[in-house]
Length: 160
Image (cartoon, rainbow, N blue to C red):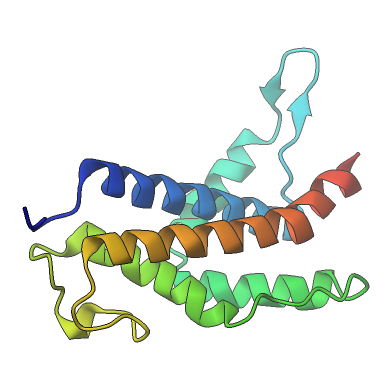
């Protein structure tokens, strides 16, 4: 049987991977602006909740993927000069394609063969939902692992 739309599992993966990467990027960006989460150890309450919520609502929610990409690259370049972090090969295109594929899953009504205008450049005309899902998952793993290992780990170490 030919699958004419993505499976629920594929949709779930794309959504959860996108949310996870968005949250990681937001955490890195907030921290670079000096907005680390500040917890009261006795009450286990977020002390700066209002500031974080305001920053997220008025800045992060409207920040598009291209702007996040440029900001993350600037943070890596400026805040991590000493670490000499090298971005993964084709980082810009991979992150853009990650969001393009997310948009295809979120917005396309047609599906076994997605219109070429909606396709990331590296995918063939006859890409299937499975192809798109695999590419999204692969990009998520690579970018998420890179950010956690090279950036997020440093953020949590420098806080302690």
